[in-house]
Image 1: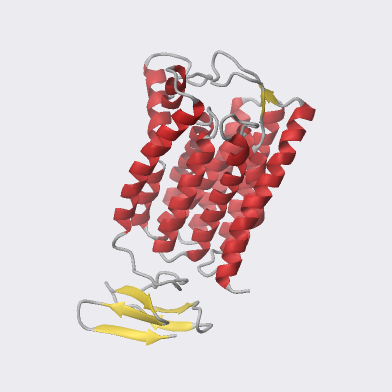
Image 2: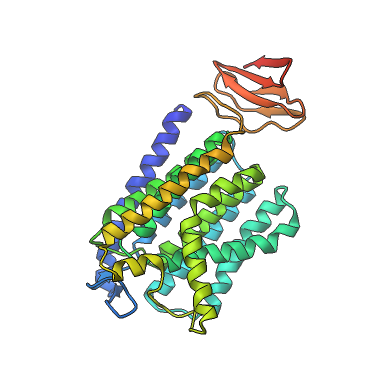
Length: 361
């Protein structure tokens, strides 16, 4: 099987697995009485089952680690293992909370532990250890802010589809095909869930899904940042609408002296629904804002190496380096300081202003 077929197969598998598991989760939630009831602090009007995010989690666990380990530009096993274990931990505590409410501190402690596990794995792969506490806090915040923003039909699923595809494009521009396909698998899994969560929703994501989506978006953003720190900016632009809404709403509640840690309906998307927007219209408006902001995310990537259709190799360091390639199993090359690389018709060129050097697979 060639690499393109494998990548397409992984993405399609994520979509199908998510749809099958979510369909089963609807029946399971009805049997177990896992229902979100309408209330003053909620935006829906009918009892709706929760826990559908388990479909996204299962699809991601069955496809993303395989992509990151099997495709060119693969990540170290320790990093992939940490990502999988962190995902399982966050999903498990969310699944438990969907069945029976858990206290805040144990739940938050496991979330920090999960983010910390991933941060330690990144540090062991070359990141400075000084970043570990920063990434722990960032991961914990990402998990919770995506939980906060899961409040109307289809909204969080649309966001994950949008960010997943955006991160996939950024990863491909950075010549990281394994990460690109993994992000596409996340988007496909979210699309499989969205089919059942679109207005009017047949099932809600639940904590098992919303927290895990926050972890995965944080994880892929951190992985891109480790590849090239410039990539943090377009990645953050993709998440900017959710980050701004949740952060400003939380800050406003804290400054106003309200119980900021309790459920409420003060996010922008909730104000829109309360003002008369339907879930579909409100979600569409917010998606339009996300796409408008996401369009600017490509500009920070303009300086990345240009690649052709077979761009399946990593950034080259300033030293001899072995490199996967379609036409030959191994390419040994040297990148000159300050040069960029271009892949065209089976040839890798290292381009300075003058002269330029080329080596062929």
